[in-house]
Length: 424
Image 1 (cartoon, rainbow, N blue to C red):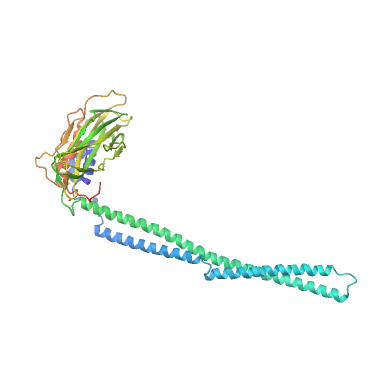
Image 2 (image 1 turned 120 degrees about the vertical axis):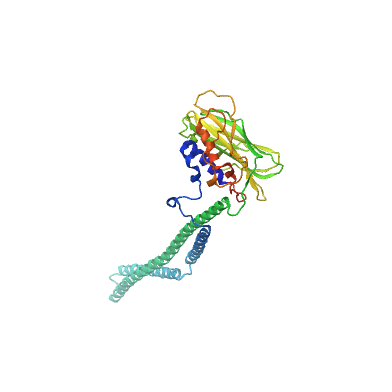
């Protein structure tokens, strides 16, 4: 429900920059000067882009699958290059065996020559020498044949390995392309989903939500003064004052603080957390999102949400305000929420100060018209400031209330229907 974010932004801006109050309406107007307007792609264009991204991704997946199959095929021992390498290996082995035999023949022939004596005939000596010469020639030929076979084997192995490396490289590139295409597809899908969500929030396809003053949010136990460096626990009571069950109720809380001058915000030094009644786990409230929804809040029933406000020890003395509200969403599509923001002011005391008794009291930020109706942000009243309570906080906190009022309490319910299950 984007309107709460707008309210939170306006509150913070008004507290830190009071002059902004003079131009709240144009800041939230639907039309901007041409020099500041940035064309957004239409949903149709985003759908086209998402479809194109999907097509690229599908092609990349197919290419990766084909590359994987190619790797499996090329790793087989039955490819032409693998068979050629196997044949070259056999020839090299045979050449190696032949060379070994030829070398042994030379050794044997030389031994025969060396064994000749003076008693041997000239014919025997001549025959032995001839055998040695032939064995030596055969060994030279066998050595050359082995060298040639080894060279052929090396070339065949290289050709086979190069083919496999090329296939593996192609698969790697295909995987990278698939990864990049998936990222593009997810980005396109996300942009489309966001555009559709924004369109739904802007009411292009749904009815407006309605104010429900009987859905109340009340802060209980928040001290009127919080000492820097401490934490204080309190609770947010959400009550369905109607006689009908609300299927989902979304509590909302926002905290803002400044120093005593009201010119320097302390938002980074104040922290708001929440926990459900049955849980001891604390979760941060980030000033934009609702807390987890309360399911099926019956008419007349209430639920307490545990809250905790922590102020950093480095925080100077100053002023703070916590705004609370609530919205509901029913399974049948009906929705609405608190017509007013409740503002609970508190003082921030410097570290080491003594705690001051007393609770923060509410000062609702209300419309100055008795009949609150949905309206656009651009038609919200400007210039009316409402105080949020009667504490000692400076007028800067009144400006925070004025910011919400300037947008218009009724604007809280302008076109904020959401898709079921969405908590934004």
